[in-house]
Length: 164
Length: 99
Image: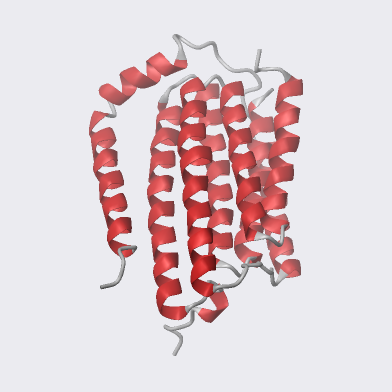
């Protein structure tokens, strides 16, 4: 159902529009809210690729967790500085040229490559396959990832502790 | 939709994110651009994984998402620390290492 061209184009317009808004709005706070929309749209892309579990993770971790953290950081730093944070951009022409050139290059490469036009059928449900793989082939990497997350969060708390 | 449509979409998002990283002056704004670029890479991974019929693409994306969250938590902690000592978020003003 989610694998229709109409759904894909809807997501494409939503994603590109909100991504442009993220890098172009003046207000940093609005920028974060547009990023939340872009991340939600990405969850939709994952749905259209039949990766339902990833879509849920994307919503929980990114659109839920990350955006909240960034909003907190903005509120805290605004209070520290005591003024509203507007964000200006510089080097619009140079940045636009560089990003545009890279985009053209990538699109040319994608156009030239012989890519699969249709997806092969799934052997089982994607979530089941992922669960099996995580607990067998990728078990060590998964555990290391848990350690990494714990270390990073403890480190972040240590950095941001109140001065005494 | 074919694989090339997903790759083209992620290429556009990557370019938009790169544009943000290059042009934003605010450190948090630069971080948001990096998020967009990472997001584009994740779409690429999932699309390639789905069209090759394997599950590895989805697993790597799961790992990439978790690592990104750790990166943002640390990045924002560094931004807050920078605020405390330098009272600014503008990347141009953070030139302590400049000789």
